[in-house]
Image (cartoon, rainbow, N blue to C red; front, side, top):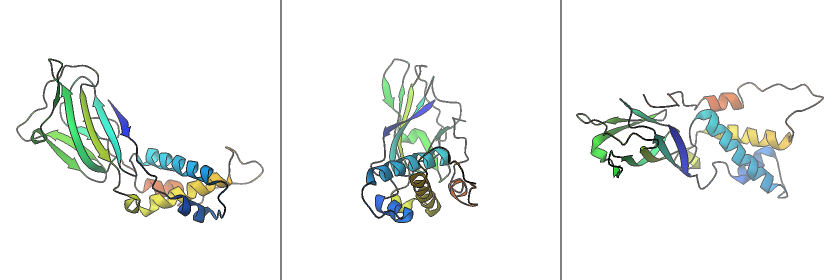
Length: 196
């Protein structure tokens, strides 16, 4: 099983202006660097939280057929489920009728199960013979939780100020309740790894 990005988010949740204001950067000479830091901070937050921050088209690929029970779609929250396509025993790609499955979505997880009285169909039994395409993430930057947005600001400012992997000659400590705590507040703690 794997989940791939089909179409990445078209924008980043944190604007260049917001990041620069937080980091007290008042010149444009390093806008490219700050933009790259915003992208890196976004990727870090998405990895830690196990979710997409802005609308991203994903495809969940299952190997050797449907599982016995339900399928978890990673990186909530779900925006739309586009299609469930499987390769039947004759090698034809078939789009599963939405009446044949149920979608149970929350901010923490999205799960597909067969509809009441239905079963998952038989597939050809090969890698990637089930492909579920969906869009996940918050609707827009204004919908991203404030603590996640603040963690992005802190990361960008920290990375801008400290451009090397190691700071020499100083005593450092994490400020309590900062990036780790802010990101943990919206972390997905569901299965995050497979089907049930």
